[in-house]
Image 1 (cartoon, rainbow, N blue to C red):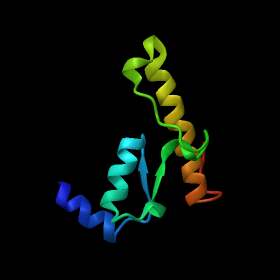
Image 2 (cartoon, one colour):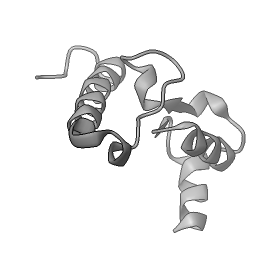
Image 3 (cartoon, one colour):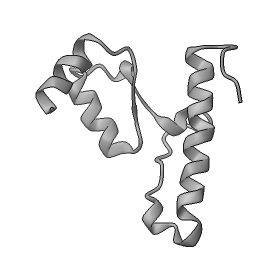
Image 4 (cartoon, one colour):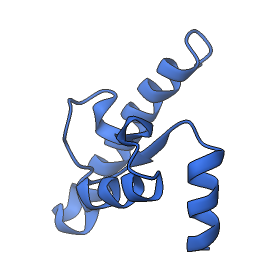
Length: 88
């Protein structure tokens, strides 16, 4: 799978979205150093450089918080790549 991801990353994707800085670095490497193809998910609605927290360390509400973060930022991402086509 890893070799296939390298091929796909370099040739077929315009955008790669990472959940945290570790994933970000891995994806930049897979994209051949092209950090213009890689963004953190929370850059879309919550501010640059913020990771999606690990829900296991968020107590009882950790999973709900992460779900809210992901839904909010995915909606903003979709609005950016496809303006006017997102229905809530």
